[in-house]
Length: 310
Image 1 (cartoon, rainbow, N blue to C red):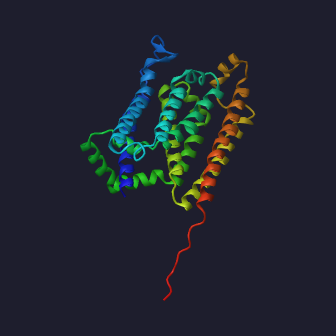
Image 2 (image 1 turned 120 degrees about the vertical axis):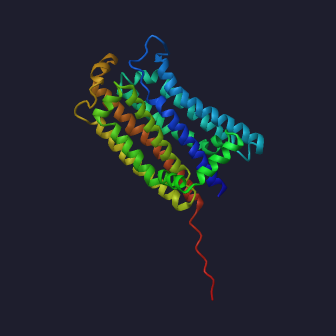
Image 3 (image 1 turned 180 degrees about the vertical axis):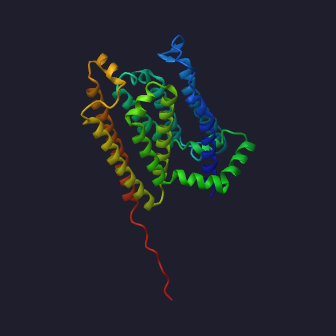
């Protein structure tokens, strides 16, 4: 019961942080500021992306320190969990604040690498860091109590159960992935910074919910369902990758002008990007599925229900 309350309150903290940072992610101050840039990224872009990540990392660090002081490392947050969250943030920085962000504007293949880092590397690492309760402990005692009470409300508890239900999370993740790869929407992300940021936010959010729902499965039946969702994700993401790879013509007109600078036609660039989504991404899902399958087998069959004789 206490763990569920902490998780709901922590989820509330994360949701509030996401909502408060959304305007920064979606903000576009006219044309990009090319005169003031760091590593090829405009200062406004660094702030749009860096501030939410910095806030998440700072809250996590404060929460970890307080928990370790209170109950010790072994009882509160394991070092592996903290390292996982830190690694997830580092991957986010590399995907969104490195030259990879600019390269994704020039080649579809680089854009695919960026997306796979967000959804298949950063998201599960962040989830394995178990940040929800840790974020809660970053607040003063009064703030923690208020958030805990708010997290216990029926409305929020019902909302959290709905969005973290494996079927809901799987569906949301699948819809986000397929919709954003529609040619008109994808091309729009390459010319409008606000739409571009919205794409990345929804990719990351859907992946976080997806991995949270699957990696937090505890009951043996829930673990079996999680494995099923992983394998069905392999099917539909692989299908999208195959469609992009074997398309007869380029889907995304933006790269018609930029791909030749790299010695590739737009169609060859698209085929390379489709293969990245299809093969390496599928291998990541397969790896997670095999680990979860091994854990499910080790758990053994459920104990039979004993009935007393009368």
